[in-house]
Length: 282
Ligand SMILES: O=C(O)CCC(=O)C(=O)O
Image (cartoon, rainbow, N blue to C red; front, side, top):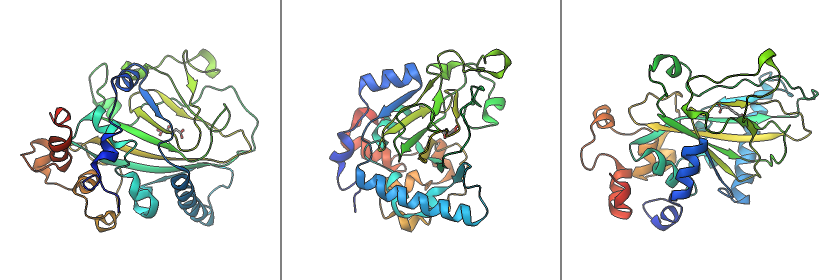
């Protein structure tokens, strides 16, 4: 079994570069092309479809969006996304080591069968009440999400994520008058299957209707500080994730006090960085 402890080079090879940091800080997101190989895309696609079949069997709309929280609890190929070598080094590069997963979601958008519309999409910053209850302006970053694209989204109209680059500094987003058209600077994310998109929770973004004839499948993994309360039940049996201490950290292991005031040896990712990439262990 692959693990960061056994095979550190696979993770070290993908550390955040200065250019990637600058792009993330400027735009509020970062694309990681080829994060998943074809085998991973196929395995995850199959696992997503299995959940989608349950959604349909429970009366879900075959043309509607299926947004299924805590997909990590399904186990199988979702487990390897906890600490994926293509993305985890970017996540710790951006947030540091005192992190864990707070939320996962799989998202299936079948062809809606509807004609395209020019109505303004539903832009939001992630984390609901956080945006009202944090009084700072600009808002605090706190968390980010990694979106893994499991189908090609190569043009507009395919149920793309839309976002406004640079808007992570904004408490409010000016919207076009009359509810028509998209805000200044908004763009559709285009990505072949296997791409990961890492985005700041504060960047204003929107899910959109799928007007194409192809299903869109995406899986989201959210990472935040260990002192944040998680959003999901996170029902995965930790034993199913194997013995990796870093994985266990990312699943939420550790004492409540260690989330705020970790002592030496209490945060496995910090210990790992101290050994392998000490400048990132600060
Ligand atoms: O489905 C999408 O592309 C966007 C989802 C979204 O709005 C979110 O993750 O908060």
